[in-house]
Image 1 (cartoon, rainbow, N blue to C red):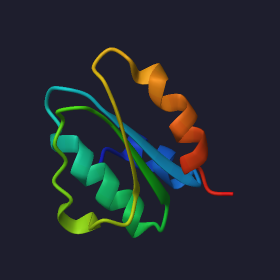
Image 2 (cartoon, one colour; image 1 turned 90 degrees about the horizontal axis):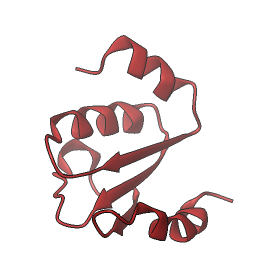
Image 3 (tube, helix red, strand yellow; image 1 turned 30 degrees about the horizontal axis):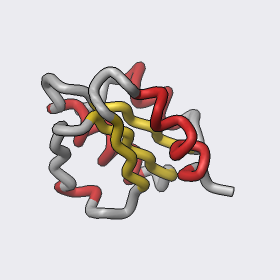
Image 4 (cartoon, rainbow, N blue to C red; image 1 turned 30 degrees about the vertical axis):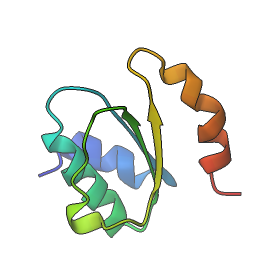
Length: 84
């Protein structure tokens, strides 16, 4: 279940950008599924070693990874992942 505050933020944006790092990722699939249901363009930026259960969202998203502690190295790739 996606909290109302988060749901409103996802609804108000054109792009769903999710950053996942080591730790509890239980919220990730819920928010991604909610964004997919709204037809949002989705980009998942995940730390290397973090697994993501595609579940209901399938494979219809951009996927980028970064080494632990070096998220800034993915910013250039992120620019290319944005829709034109």
